[in-house]
Length: 397
Image 1: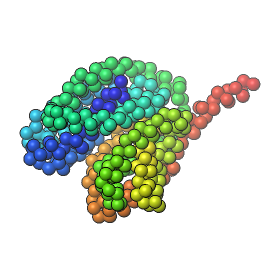
Image 2: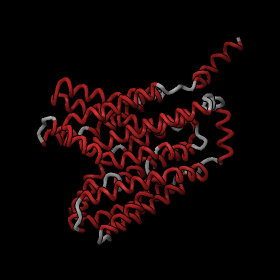
Image 3: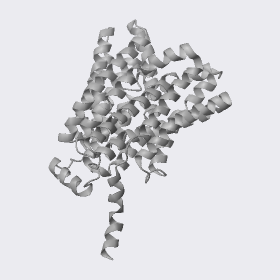
Image 4: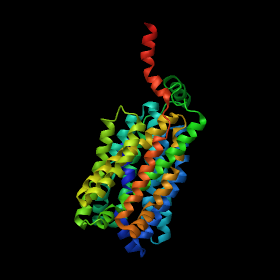
């Protein structure tokens, strides 16, 4: 239910401007960049909303927050549908920003943790696996709706889907255990596992994760906005650039399948370290073999991005445990949302100045994220907790 609802939420917000900004701007007499400016404002609003929404999920569970997000999404999309001036567009995207801050991955991850505690890794992976098809579903559906009913009709259709599909799915989520019961269970199941790091070490881990999440979201958003243009600057034709860029989406889903299968038993920190190397490795292939390796670059970037999306949910759970997860997750993602809002503009400037050489900017950022994760201290109590049955068996003998 969370995965399907997340597919709808992402398709009707994050992936909406790519298809509708052009016709929307043409009718309202503004440039598409103005529409994307309103979208960037929504990302900043979502950064401010995230910690509040996470705190509410910690207290009341995800169901009321996610249901409210569907109502806010529907109101924002309806506002877009009736907009007649640029100021109306900005006001509607402000509402959508509130919906994004309380209804996208961070809220869904916090909901899964509130329901499953320390065992939420599988649920987080499943949510991202299903929602990985948001662009695959959203872009063609938005384009078809715009062709049939215009961009206003497309926005109204998405608003209706939030009311008839997303809201019931979120409303059917089970009630979470009482907060005190969850605390007691966490104390029994994870005694000493999240508390083995000192407060200073936990703060350091928090800063590292905030940096890594911000860097990876910058790179992901920059590539989503400029990958075809980057490949054109490297010498590819338009048809080749578009077809290669289309490989990123399926590769992201493949990365999540790898996490769900081969990396299921691996330490989340190991998965994250490997994933941060994927984009730089793809860039190395491009540097060594030119445009002949463009497909390998797109696939490697997509694989790493897919796994990192899961790491955003699982690493804080590993380091800090489930208590207060929602609010902490919202705070950790504030820098990521802010840099995400500026990523298309900043990487676009780099592309204009350096051409294909701008890829070394994203490569350097990816390597810095890997270095930061290598500096993160592993919770040693996880190993001792996992080995406790063996120790008990030896003691009993």
